[in-house]
Image (cartoon, rainbow, N blue to C red; front, side):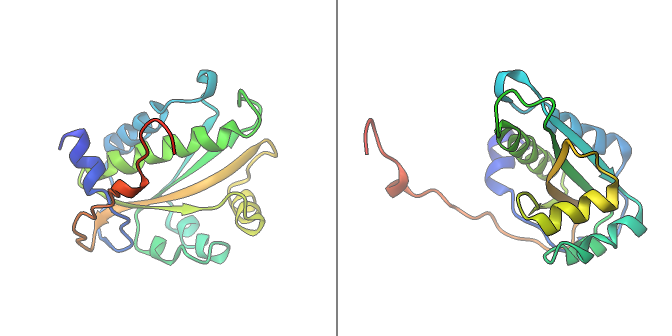
Length: 169
């Protein structure tokens, strides 16, 4: 699948079929995440890969929209390191770019995924902090659930010419 096809066919998948994700594919997803651009090349991200079913099943306790994780074999927490960011608040932008790269790479590999936001919602951040033992300078931006798709969603054409402005508003 070429890059444009991976971008244009990416959908949020919330139902998964059984099957573990190969470690080599997980590595490739993380490599895609770490290839994202970042402010002043600060790369303020850390990724927590969760495959332990006991940990995965606890996530809906603090994230009200994470019930699909009970079917997913993999979750990746994308976290920002405040000690590595190159400008105040830049970690959010940098980690968002890394997240999108992982979502696109997952689609290109035939996997389904969904972005579950956490930051800046304190109950989600503190829940993840407690579950994963995060240091105080590490903030979880989101969780990406990943698995083999248990649903098929057609591409969604979201291009809207009315949102395009040439040279000025």
